[in-house]
Image (cartoon, rainbow, N blue to C red; front, side):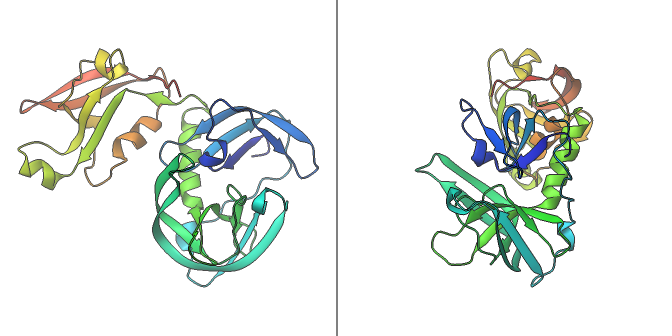
Length: 272
């Protein structure tokens, strides 16, 4: 945005102890003052203190993409060749990939990404993938190490969802947290185990919001702020949490010993 918000990949700014700088097109350098790392996708929002960064690129509608349409990638391949522009086509849609390297300490499953044959190299991460109208249709995020001209981008509609969630929290860089490790179980799995569809708590962190609300290992969260936890979506609970900000109090429904109970839970700031 024109007031200094910038989207890039989470793995580009993965080191929470590091400081980061942004070099603008006029070669002026600005320090990054805040970072929000999206726990659901390989995305991050950065903040720099400027009155204006110029015109922000418009977001396109990635759900309207067609195979074979023009794709334009911009980035800094190999960390050396700034403002490199490459072109190609949209080669695939709805791909699922495992991005990163265990040797680099970053491995993440990414679903519904865009495949393109526009040349993308190490160093292109975080750069835009554009359509022929100059609209952002994706964020370049990964390449195939074993193939040629096989690159991947996170679709722009995922960016729109992140921005909407961020704005819903009033533009807060603080990440809300309830303090549970969980596994979302489907209705089918629940029926097989005489349980109920929802988020099964594998661990409630001591002194966390969840523990303070009385949740324990073995409970199954079935509703969050009045919304049902859908068992077909592994990120269902995380998405609902990210729609709130630290300090919000929500009603949470959970299943224990065959009974559903409700309790109040106040979200706290993540220590990440």
